Length: 410
Image 1 (spheres, rainbow, N blue to C red):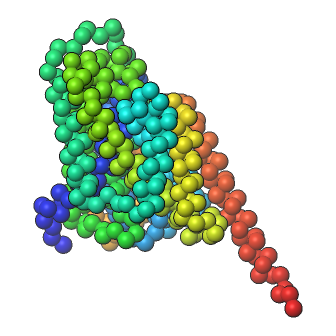
Image 2 (image 1 turned 90 degrees about the vertical axis):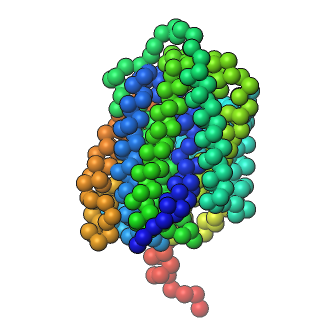
């Protein structure tokens, strides 16, 4: 199938708002605290891991177009229990990611009451989704232009004036892999184009063959430039303590007049990224209901409230911990999806099996290298979620069996 440059541009524009979220606005602070300037080469590892995982999800979406995302792919390829673990990792990662996006919004837009701002964003974005609002190609392109334009101003301001000498530097090269795992979350929005939701037109393999590398590559360049700018202007020690790095970099560069623009960009990016995250979690819950792992009586509004409640609970975590849990759980999720992509038939592949193997290995390595508190919370959440889903499915199966064997009352 042939493709046109316009199709590729539209596909990339659809994916950018889901990628340019909390990672570019808030992710550099915890990363700089761990690795300092080594954050920049760590981004290359994160981008490569994301590229492999994007290839895997695109192939599986084409092979199983009607199933519930990664949970459905893994259930079809690897079985029930791996799928339940996949769903648990995905839901935990998405709730933590939603919390990170919401906290980023609060830090930039409502700095005096960031938690209240986070709750307001969660509720407002959930209501937008409930009334049927969707980020079309046109809206996504507009969001991308706004965010990229403001980021360009931040980069230019950061390099336009000599920074004040830093009080010291933080981080070591020993944290390179750990920070690569942490910053993987910054690229995880690629599923917006690799695994469309039901009712959305899927993108052809020929379009994705170009659009995926362009999306990941463009995001990598943007992250690299922004990271270099804020590290130069603030230094790793000051950056590590900043709740809103882009705002503080502008203030340090004597460009405070541009702060309102950064707040607008953070608000727009927050709504766009959170909309994708909530929809993604909702799709996994819907898949669990359809496959019988959750009660069939759960209505869509209940599923939405469940995701919002879990995300609101995660906002009580410090930003760095929430970011670590989002990254770690999401990497576990992609470890399972890459593992299931390895066993796809050759006819269902666009990319060679080795990309799925690389994605699997990198996902496990990066997940296990995330900060210890985030790793422990993720492992505990993965175990608890899998056990709860399994228990719910078992109880439903027993009740169904008992109803079949109970004589009908005369």
